[in-house]
Each structure stands twice: as C-alpha cells, then as structure tokens.
Amino acid sequence: MPPKKVSRIAYSTQLGKCYQAFAEELLSPSNPARPGGVSLILTSPPFPLNRKKRYGNQQGEEYVEWLRSFAPLFRSVLRPSGSIVIEMGNSWEPGRPVMSTLALRSLLSFMEEGKFNLCQQFVWHNTAKLPTPAQWVTVERIRVKDAFTHIWWLAPTARPKASNRRVLVPYSKSMKALIASGRYNSGTRPSEHNIKPTSFLKDNKGAIPSNVLSSSNTSPNTAYLRYCRERGIPPHPARMPVDIAEFFIKLLTQPRDLVLDPFAGSNTTGAAAQRLGRRWLSIEPNESYVSGSKGWFRSDLTDP
Picture 1: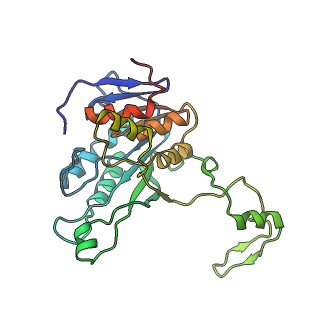
Picture 2: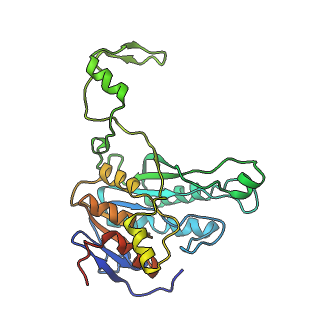
Picture 3: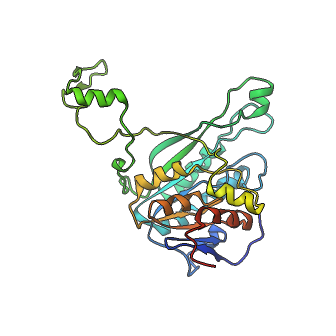
C-alpha cells in the first residue's frame, strides 16, 4: 500500500476527474471536496485474498471491518434512487482445498452497516481465466477451475433507478423466426405457467439478458495496455472488462448521471462512463495505476 498523500486531481476530462487519493479520506464528511449526488457506485475493491497482492488487499477479519467502514461513506454520497455494484472475487483457505466464506461475510457486514437492499446477484464468467487454484486444479487435480466472480447490486431502496430496456441483447435466429411467423405454442406448461398466444410474439427490439455475464480482459490491444507498454508502466493485475462496466452503467444510469469508482485501479469504470456520456469520478491511491489509467483518455484529457 502506498504511503498516504494529500488528495489531488491527477487528470480530468470534460466528463470526469481521477483523484490520486484514498477513498476513506476523499469521501470523509469533513472533506470539502467530497462528492455528492452519485447515481452509481461501480467498483471492484481489492479482493480478500489470503496472500498479499501489489494492489494492497486487506486480509482476514481486518478485511471485513475495512469494507464495512465504507458503507456509511457510500450511502452519504449516493442519491436515494442510486445503486452500488460491487465485484467480489473468491478466495480459498490457506493451504487447504476449501473455499473461504470471507467475501460473503464481508458483503453481509457491509450491507448490514449501510442498511442496503440486495437488488440482484450477478455472475461474471471470465472466459479466459487461468486454471486456479493451481495446486488443487492442475497439480493434485481435485478441484475444477474457479472461473467466475460475483457481482452484487445493492441500493438504499428496493426500487432504485434501473431499466433493462437499455441493455437488451440481439434476438437469436430462432426468436426472430418465431416473431416473423406469428405462431407460438401457447398453453399451460408443466410449471403451471399459462403462456398466452401473444406472449412471445411482440418485437421488443431485443431480448432481456440474464444475470450471468460472460467476458474476458485478455485483449492486448486496448488503449490502456498500449499506453502502459509504451511508457513501461506495469498494468493493473486485476482489471474488470470494459463491457461489464458498460452493462451496469447502461442498466442503472442515464446520460449525465454521476458514476463513482472509489477503488479505481486501472479506471475501467471511468473509461466506460466516458464512452457512454456519463459524468464520472475515480479514486485510486497508487500513483503507478493512476498514471497508466490515463491511457483510456488520450484524446479526452483536459489538463496538460
């Protein structure tokens, strides 16, 4: 973890600002620079792994208390209709082929402290995930590859601002043919659902996506990675794919809404918000990660 420094704006665009700072300092009620009116907090905090990483993860019960401490800070800057989306990775007990419940306990503690509602659980299936934990998967062959993380959608209210019409996906060929035919096998199903003849024949301009999102972050040619290579900056080792961030920003915000990432890392959230015309704020204490994240915004930076 880098030493604490006075908060500063590292760079900005017409839509957003990246602060090199610690989130607990910038979001403190005593800080005059503290933001407000946030529509979405979209973030991937350091995972509660059982070994230290370069990005400064907490461990054990210390992690539970650390994450819990952010609940009142997040709630204080969030709009009443706003949302919090948190990616939580899995962890394993040290030296044992047993999964840890630390991430779940941390999430429940955070929810309890902030009195948040759990709106929906999502799964990000990382299609390019390496076979881990290696000892149990590739050496002893007693477990299968751990290839997903949970993404939790929380909110102060049970009905935060949201619309799945903004994240529709293209119809399959069979669904397009079904709509074109005007015929559907209606009637009562074994589940006792009564399907009306017109239930699935309306063209809604796309299908409603599921809460399982498949993506990878292995492309070597993103603007971010090219920028890091050109300048010899080590890229962040745990990056959320831009399309995952875009999905939640479209689902839960509208243009000009404010999106905050308090643990920005490579600032994928800011990059996705910029693309979608949302205002954004990101907070990251690591100077190297902040420097590399400028690569998303080469043509958009407003400071020298």
